[in-house]
Length: 507
Image 1 (cartoon, rainbow, N blue to C red):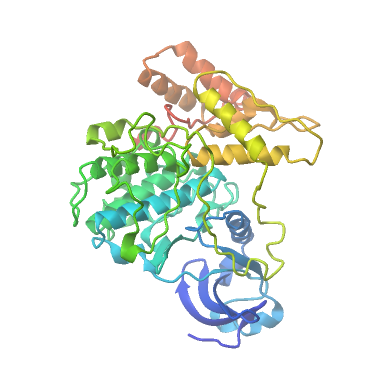
Image 2: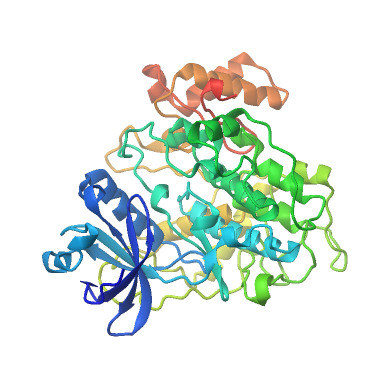
């Protein structure tokens, strides 16, 4: 349906190109610059619910911070005025409904390519998605609804879009804290329990595994047409079916996908960089891959293509390609930290970034220069990885960028899989959320769960590391959330090599 006279801010709406439970997506045009855009509008009763409005606003704030060639760019946002609502009344859009304008992505959903991609094409697409996820995860954003319909390929771009479920506030999620959100064929087991504390980067990696299975075999591992309860049972308890790809794939690809689809989060790759490093071991050639008519640009995820940065495991010869057996692939946990933090420059299409004031103050200003300071911080990180206890202290007057440098180090290290980041704050007045202990508890998601669950999961983690000390299990559990411990409540998800808590009967 076309409504050529409908307007939102500087945009003219032309036709509806997508519709979902929360609203509609329109094809539009920026009048002054004659540039096509996509405009997403909340409508109906949902647009009047405070929780959804806050979630929509959070999506704008979160995605506005992302600057990546494989993530859709947001241009502007606002609310429908009384005058604008008159032209949209027939679509159920009222005054005050929030909207956002974003890059109009051409092409088709990845579902159209299932079973049709060569290994080179599939490899390139998966690396591009992992690159986008690494960027988002490093900035605290978990997508939670990765599926073929939320990734588009066309022309020269692969774009990840629709971060709406990623940012619904945990304490304001419609339906309450136990509401389940996602698309069942691609949901990780922890999503079915409706507790957002259980979700992390590994949740998106499970969905990526289901997506990769779909592209290779034609449909996700547990099918598309089953009802929700059947799919829930399959993801929680069902064994993966036989892997029957429609195209020729390397032997190591199936173990790679199956590791992404492990039931327990701690058995999956923990970071997008980890999964990308293992996938690169299956690379068709040493050269960059340009899938589907040579159009897809693949920025390097984990290793800069500069001479100072290893593109293979340290010690590998330049003329010797990295090959991995299926057995070796399942043992890979993380890539080596590159000697240099730099990466090749990539172009992010901004276009209408300055078209309106809606995003003023939301976009993150890229960190430029400060190369000497960044080099010193990266060297400190390399020393820490070698086993040397290392402290990097940033000193200087207020306003000279200390916090920005620290945030850069955390984000870059997370993107590359080089470090586990735990953030702690110290306010001038002090409070219960200050300090390293609270930062550790927040990192391990130790909030509002029975302490017995914490002890049980820590005990399981210690056993996997050949350490069954009951005293250590209690000590680690208590240290992770001392305040909650006093109220008989706690929760646990652990980082690399440890256990993540989820309901006991999930097994």
